[in-house]
Structure formats: C-alpha cells, structure tokens
Length: 250
Image: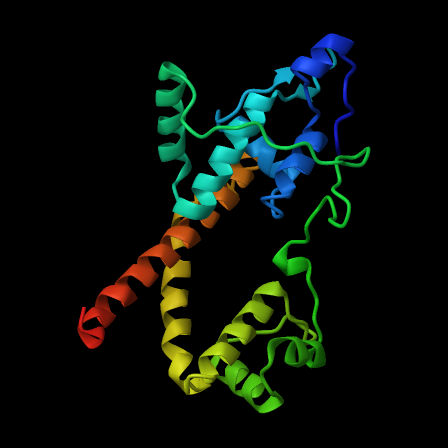
C-alpha cells in the first residue's frame, strides 16, 4: 500500500522536497519500469538507502535518496553487480562524498498513488501472466508444430490447463529468433538440461531463506535468485563469446 505524502514547510518543499515511497516509485519507473514498492523496501532493509521517517512512521525520501536508488538499480541492471559489491561502493562514497555523475532526476507528473500515466503501479509477475495456446503462437512467431515439439522436448512447459506465463512467451520468441538462423527445437534440448542443472544448484542456495517465515528473508531469497540468474546469463554469454573467437578469427 502506498504511503501518503506528508506536508512540509513551503520553503523547504521548494528547496529540498521530500517524497513518499509512491512518488519515488513514480520517479524511478520512468527508467526502471520493473521496480516495485516491495523492491524499494527491500533495498532499505539491506541498508542501501535510509529514508527519513515521519512521526507516524511513513518513509520520506530526499533527492539524494532517489539518486542513490537510481545508482543501485543501474548497477544491478547494467553491470549485474551483487548487492554486497554495491553496498561496498556506496560505503566508500559515503566516506568520501557523492560519486561522480549523480544528478537529481527530472520531475515527472505522478498520480496520488505514485503511478506514472500509462504505467500500472504494480507490474505483474511472470507467473501472473496467462496466455492461451493461440495467443502464445500469435505473439511469439512460432507455429503450432514448433510449439508441440518444444513441449515434447521439455523446453517449454505450460501450466495446467494449458496456460503460458511471460517467461513462456520469452522462450517462444527466442526459439523463433533462433529458428530464423536455422536452429530447430531439437538443437535446444541442451539448453533445457543446462537450465535444470542451474536450477538445482541455485535452489540449494535460496532454499534456506525461502523456508523462513520472515517476509524479509523471502524478499532476500527473491533478490538472491534474481542476482544468480543475472550472473549466470553474464557468464554464459562470456563463455560463448570466448568459444566463438577462433571461429571468428579474433
């Protein structure tokens, strides 16, 4: 639930305005459309930002807090940095001043709940997206026979009774793109096997957090899983590039 904005002296509002968590969400969503209020609260729990609190306990963010959050989100998205590395960098900058390049973001009109026009406040999770078979085929570019083959090989799995989530659409679109270069579903079986091995490995790392009843622990589990996936993608891409160098003559 979004927190209401608290009033502040007119002069202070003009010089150093403080924002509610919903207003901060509206600012960041222009550049980071997937960020959520839960994510902002998680980053606070991890000590990456420390917003002020009103007497009623509501969070109030400064422009420096917004710049700090933008740095954290950029480092995660563009550099795949884990939170412990980002935390160390922030600690160094806190000791010596702001890092170069931090700028106040431009103001963006937001609704009373912090929503940006044209964007929903809560982006749906992948598991909340439901696509029928015909919709998946139409939106991905694969045909019915290819879809059937992907399911037979276990590359694409539907949720009973035959629904596909957002990740299913991503898989289908990637398959369609690879097919344009001549790769067939049978060539992709190794991807499924490799992914299953990673799932087993990563599950061992996040399972202890998932088993805890503390919501903060579950949030850390989700963030850990996200970081592991991002690092895995980075590693896989680098290994493929290295492997292709001899073929490319580089």
